[in-house]
Amino acid sequence: MAGSDTHAAYDPTVFFISLVVGATVIVLVWLIRRSKSQTSDVPEKNTQKKRTASSKQSSQKPPKKKQAPWQKPGPAVQFSHPELLTTLKGHSGVLTGGAFSSNGKYFISTADDRTVHIWFTKDFDHRHHRSLRVNIEFDHATKVCWSPDGKAFIIQKAAANCMEVYKVTRKDDGSLGGAQVALTFPQEDREADVIAMDVAVSGKFIMTCNNKNQLTIWSLRGDIMETLDTRHGETYSATLSPCGRFVATTGFTPDVKVWEIKFGKTGSFEGVKRAYDLTGHRAGIYSCGINSDSTRMVSVSKDGTWRLYDTNIEYDKGQLVYLLRSEPIERKDYPASVRLTPDGRTIVIALGPTLTFYSAITGEKLNTIADVYTGDIVDVCFDPDNKRVLTLGDKHIRVFHNVAGYIATIQDFEHSLKKATNAGMKERLKQQIKDANRALETIRKVTKNCRANIKKTQALDNIQPREDDGAVDKDIDDTGEPDELPLDFEDFDVEASGSGGVGGSTVVARSSEGAGGN
Image (cartoon, rainbow, N blue to C red; front, side, top):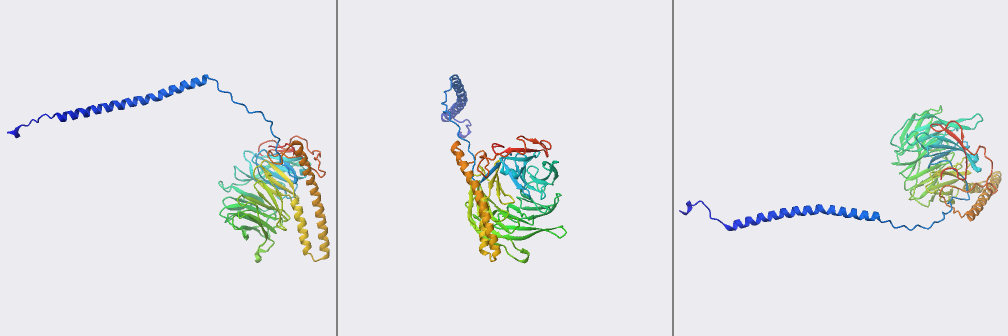
């Protein structure tokens, strides 16, 4: 039967298909292996070509470059201004802070060069300036202030992030001899940066404020008496009033918060109380300035204005702060700092490298000194007599005549004369106006002679009146000629009480010409 045959017939089609598939697989495998071998040979060939090309290039001499023609270097660029009295040079690093002593005899400055310099203010009128240099070991100061009696100074150390008290020693003749560490305060907050530090004129406490909105009151022994939140969200500045009664803080909020540091009749600390606010700004406030008796306060804000307030009030009896005037500033998109003269008649705003003076009597702009430094102005200080204004920036301290202060004083007397009703008072004010005008004419003669001397120097040396390396022209005395007064110290460093290390100090006599770093 047909179904009983189990052997299938041979099919040539199936055989042919199997043969073709097998051959195709073999060919594909061969092609893949060949492509891999070719790609591996390409880098070797390229490497050989590169080596050959590099050897050829190395054998060839490189083409000579055309040298630019030699040009004579330009003249040294110097800062000059008719109201510039002198420049204090001695620091080799960027300045970080400065302050006058309470009696006005000394000015202290700090920089990131690990030194503190104490300057003799009576030398500001001379060509040469003495300074006592104090070295800070393995650290530098970011803030500095004097003790009320002028026998010590306090610094805020950058790396250690703590305060340190230095006692100023004297020689047998009474002159300054050196400074030694007397006390190191404990660290309050390792992560917070101190933005303000000052000591009360009464000597009862020290104030610090950090960027974490912590306002701290310290005892002179290093104990924390109280810490509170400034409630600004972000604190920009804190200013201790010269009378030692108030602390004004500013920040992200559009108000100045004024705090009273309260002590009892027996001198015991009673706490910190919110006194009043200075309101009216529409944006955050950069800084605040206070006059000597805390009867005037001034603020500068991000809203592009400064505001002057009458703070001669008894706030605990419900009296309110009175706004005297508000004026615009030139730029509101750049941080600014404001200061008020001790007599409360002149306002100065430092914005970048420029100083602008305003009258607190009329609100008008009195003067502008531009491009004081290549960088921003770090701080501005008035001397206790309102006659000079010092700026800190770069590596130098500029000392200017406060010409705007003389003008504002005359405006104040004339304003008082209009309101005077007593004949004796009128005569007294008229005499004061005459004396003030005479003083203004004298200082204008000095600046006029200085201006003429600057023009003469520029004509001879082709020096442009801009600041580059901090060098300045010779100091000019009342006659308009270079001051040639003799030095009280030799023209070289005199070791006073050790060298280097903690407390190592040196009395140095420096000239305004070329002393210090550029």
